[in-house]
Image (cartoon, rainbow, N blue to C red):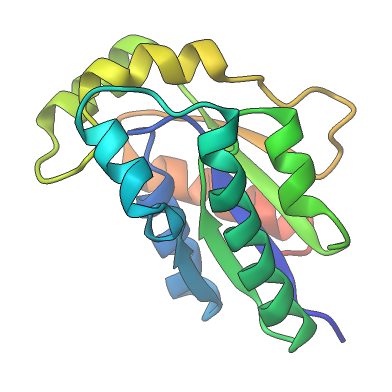
Length: 172
Protein backbone atom coordinates (compact mmCIF):
# COMPACT_ATOMS: atom_id res chain seq x y z
CA UNK A 1 0.00 0.00 0.00
CA UNK A 2 1.27 3.43 -0.90
CA UNK A 3 2.20 5.83 1.90
CA UNK A 4 0.46 9.11 2.65
CA UNK A 5 1.88 12.60 2.23
CA UNK A 6 0.95 15.76 4.08
CA UNK A 7 2.33 19.03 2.72
CA UNK A 8 2.20 21.93 5.14
CA UNK A 9 2.04 25.03 2.95
CA UNK A 10 1.88 28.81 3.14
CA UNK A 11 4.03 31.89 2.87
CA UNK A 12 7.45 32.09 4.43
CA UNK A 13 7.38 32.52 8.19
CA UNK A 14 3.84 31.17 8.75
CA UNK A 15 5.05 28.20 10.80
CA UNK A 16 5.22 25.44 8.18
CA UNK A 17 8.25 23.68 9.65
CA UNK A 18 6.98 23.95 13.23
CA UNK A 19 3.59 22.45 12.34
CA UNK A 20 5.13 19.80 10.06
CA UNK A 21 7.50 18.70 12.83
CA UNK A 22 4.59 18.49 15.29
CA UNK A 23 2.72 16.23 12.84
CA UNK A 24 5.86 14.16 12.33
CA UNK A 25 6.31 13.68 16.08
CA UNK A 26 2.70 12.59 16.44
CA UNK A 27 2.64 10.23 13.43
CA UNK A 28 6.23 8.99 13.07
CA UNK A 29 6.18 9.91 9.39
CA UNK A 30 9.34 11.05 7.62
CA UNK A 31 9.80 14.83 7.75
CA UNK A 32 11.19 16.65 4.72
CA UNK A 33 12.16 20.31 5.07
CA UNK A 34 11.24 21.88 1.73
CA UNK A 35 13.95 24.52 2.09
CA UNK A 36 16.57 21.74 1.97
CA UNK A 37 15.62 21.08 -1.67
CA UNK A 38 16.48 24.61 -2.86
CA UNK A 39 19.54 24.96 -5.02
CA UNK A 40 22.44 27.06 -3.71
CA UNK A 41 21.54 29.60 -6.42
CA UNK A 42 17.96 29.90 -5.12
CA UNK A 43 19.15 30.36 -1.54
CA UNK A 44 21.67 33.00 -2.59
CA UNK A 45 18.99 34.81 -4.61
CA UNK A 46 16.58 34.93 -1.69
CA UNK A 47 19.30 35.83 0.81
CA UNK A 48 20.22 38.81 -1.36
CA UNK A 49 16.60 40.04 -1.21
CA UNK A 50 15.34 38.85 -4.61
CA UNK A 51 12.17 36.76 -4.84
CA UNK A 52 12.15 33.49 -6.76
CA UNK A 53 10.18 33.17 -9.97
CA UNK A 54 8.46 30.17 -11.54
CA UNK A 55 11.62 29.12 -13.37
CA UNK A 56 13.65 29.24 -10.13
CA UNK A 57 11.07 27.09 -8.36
CA UNK A 58 10.68 24.46 -11.11
CA UNK A 59 13.68 22.32 -10.16
CA UNK A 60 12.93 22.71 -6.47
CA UNK A 61 9.35 21.46 -6.87
CA UNK A 62 10.50 18.59 -9.09
CA UNK A 63 13.07 17.48 -6.50
CA UNK A 64 10.48 17.49 -3.71
CA UNK A 65 7.99 15.59 -5.88
CA UNK A 66 10.56 12.95 -6.80
CA UNK A 67 11.53 12.37 -3.16
CA UNK A 68 7.90 12.19 -2.01
CA UNK A 69 7.05 9.80 -4.85
CA UNK A 70 9.95 7.48 -3.99
CA UNK A 71 9.06 7.40 -0.30
CA UNK A 72 5.30 6.94 -0.72
CA UNK A 73 5.83 4.23 -3.34
CA UNK A 74 7.93 2.48 -0.67
CA UNK A 75 4.86 2.62 1.66
CA UNK A 76 6.34 5.36 3.83
CA UNK A 77 4.31 8.28 5.15
CA UNK A 78 5.83 11.72 4.57
CA UNK A 79 5.35 15.22 6.00
CA UNK A 80 6.75 18.10 3.92
CA UNK A 81 7.06 21.79 4.67
CA UNK A 82 6.77 23.59 1.34
CA UNK A 83 5.33 27.00 0.44
CA UNK A 84 3.42 25.61 -2.58
CA UNK A 85 2.21 29.16 -3.24
CA UNK A 86 0.50 28.62 -6.60
CA UNK A 87 -2.02 26.05 -7.73
CA UNK A 88 0.36 25.08 -10.54
CA UNK A 89 3.04 24.31 -7.91
CA UNK A 90 0.60 22.17 -5.93
CA UNK A 91 -0.35 20.38 -9.16
CA UNK A 92 3.33 19.49 -9.70
CA UNK A 93 3.59 18.17 -6.15
CA UNK A 94 0.36 16.13 -6.28
CA UNK A 95 0.97 14.63 -9.75
CA UNK A 96 0.37 10.85 -9.63
CA UNK A 97 0.12 10.82 -5.82
CA UNK A 98 -3.36 9.94 -4.57
CA UNK A 99 -2.75 9.98 -0.81
CA UNK A 100 -1.73 13.63 -0.49
CA UNK A 101 -3.23 16.34 1.67
CA UNK A 102 -2.22 20.00 1.83
CA UNK A 103 -2.49 21.89 5.12
CA UNK A 104 -2.64 25.58 4.24
CA UNK A 105 -1.53 27.86 7.07
CA UNK A 106 -3.38 31.09 6.43
CA UNK A 107 -2.52 34.25 8.30
CA UNK A 108 -2.29 38.01 8.06
CA UNK A 109 0.71 39.84 6.68
CA UNK A 110 1.13 41.74 9.97
CA UNK A 111 1.24 38.62 12.16
CA UNK A 112 3.57 36.66 9.90
CA UNK A 113 5.84 39.67 9.34
CA UNK A 114 6.22 40.09 13.11
CA UNK A 115 7.28 36.44 13.39
CA UNK A 116 9.75 36.75 10.51
CA UNK A 117 11.38 39.84 11.98
CA UNK A 118 11.88 37.94 15.27
CA UNK A 119 13.43 34.78 13.80
CA UNK A 120 17.16 34.39 13.48
CA UNK A 121 19.48 32.60 11.07
CA UNK A 122 17.12 32.08 8.13
CA UNK A 123 18.07 32.88 4.55
CA UNK A 124 14.67 34.36 3.72
CA UNK A 125 14.58 38.04 4.72
CA UNK A 126 11.35 39.54 6.06
CA UNK A 127 11.48 42.03 3.18
CA UNK A 128 10.47 39.26 0.76
CA UNK A 129 7.25 38.43 2.59
CA UNK A 130 5.24 40.88 0.45
CA UNK A 131 6.37 39.06 -2.71
CA UNK A 132 5.20 35.76 -1.16
CA UNK A 133 1.73 37.21 -0.50
CA UNK A 134 1.67 38.64 -4.04
CA UNK A 135 2.52 35.21 -5.49
CA UNK A 136 0.13 33.26 -3.25
CA UNK A 137 -2.89 31.67 -4.90
CA UNK A 138 -4.93 30.45 -1.97
CA UNK A 139 -6.35 26.95 -2.43
CA UNK A 140 -9.90 27.15 -3.72
CA UNK A 141 -12.88 24.91 -3.16
CA UNK A 142 -11.91 22.81 -6.19
CA UNK A 143 -8.77 21.67 -4.34
CA UNK A 144 -10.52 19.02 -2.26
CA UNK A 145 -7.19 17.71 -0.95
CA UNK A 146 -6.60 20.86 1.11
CA UNK A 147 -7.54 21.99 4.58
CA UNK A 148 -7.13 25.59 5.70
CA UNK A 149 -5.91 26.45 9.18
CA UNK A 150 -6.13 30.05 10.35
CA UNK A 151 -2.86 30.56 12.18
CA UNK A 152 -2.78 32.16 15.57
CA UNK A 153 -0.23 33.17 18.19
CA UNK A 154 -1.35 30.26 20.41
CA UNK A 155 0.69 27.42 18.92
CA UNK A 156 -0.87 24.72 21.16
CA UNK A 157 -4.38 25.60 19.95
CA UNK A 158 -3.19 25.72 16.33
CA UNK A 159 -1.53 22.30 16.55
CA UNK A 160 -4.65 20.87 18.22
CA UNK A 161 -6.78 22.24 15.37
CA UNK A 162 -4.41 20.76 12.77
CA UNK A 163 -4.51 17.34 14.46
CA UNK A 164 -8.32 17.39 14.65
CA UNK A 165 -8.64 18.27 10.98
CA UNK A 166 -6.10 15.60 9.98
CA UNK A 167 -7.94 12.97 12.03
CA UNK A 168 -11.16 14.01 10.29
CA UNK A 169 -9.53 13.31 6.94
CA UNK A 170 -7.96 9.97 8.02
CA UNK A 171 -4.38 11.26 8.02
CA UNK A 172 -3.79 10.67 11.75
